[in-house]
Image (cartoon, rainbow, N blue to C red; front, side, top):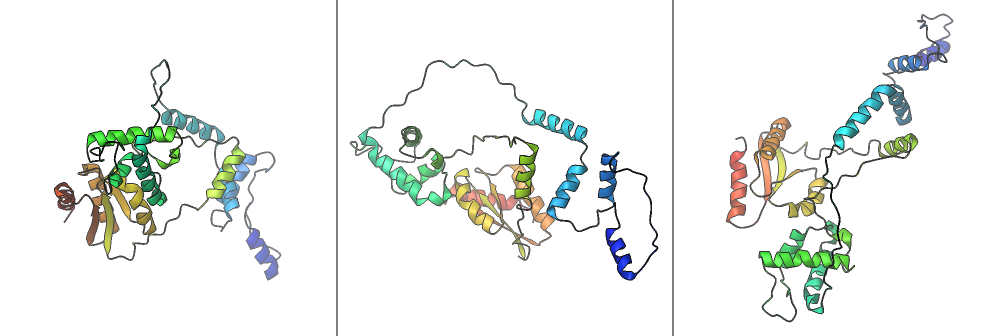
Length: 291
């Protein structure tokens, strides 16, 4: 079970008698007990990834593992859906030529921001305000604006354009409606292969550890998240989306991270609208942080 290196060293040293301990266990008759003892006797050894994986698998009690798995699945998937009856079909009106200016404006927005796809409807809304198109080509007074009517027209047109194949489905996202997909595997072997392929791939080095200040980002809107995320990830800066005046839990969590950092100063980069509310969001967040 253990002592292979000591045995090799004794041979090199020319020793013919060495002290040893005898454990009354038979590998063939008591495989589970043998594997448990083998693992305990070799915890100090440097091992390959495959050896560590086999050790962990060997130390798992099948009955306990299965019971824990079933309980986890029950808790994760507990739902009480009400029965419903589907009647009829929904149909969308065909997109007319009058919508061409707005469709083309949307396509330009998607192309200009292709590295941040998928975009939300609200992100496209704000982008269109930079160079507002006509909502209807034959109506000069139908310029796109920052109002509920324009936003409703945009969401309706985006839906019809995707259904018609004018805009890829994958280009529009909606983070307010999360989807859960279970990570299932056809066989245990497929699961082990998947875990081996991902082994040690989640490592992120703390690039801010040598910085004198603790730095974090707070964004006012969810629409900013896809744009901020890749930049924040590059420098491993924690990011909070406040959705307006940030609620207490995210503020408290940020303060706790600052305290845990052990640094003297906190630097919060607040990204908000350049208007009275946006400036007050930044001031409000600063006032709520520990001095």
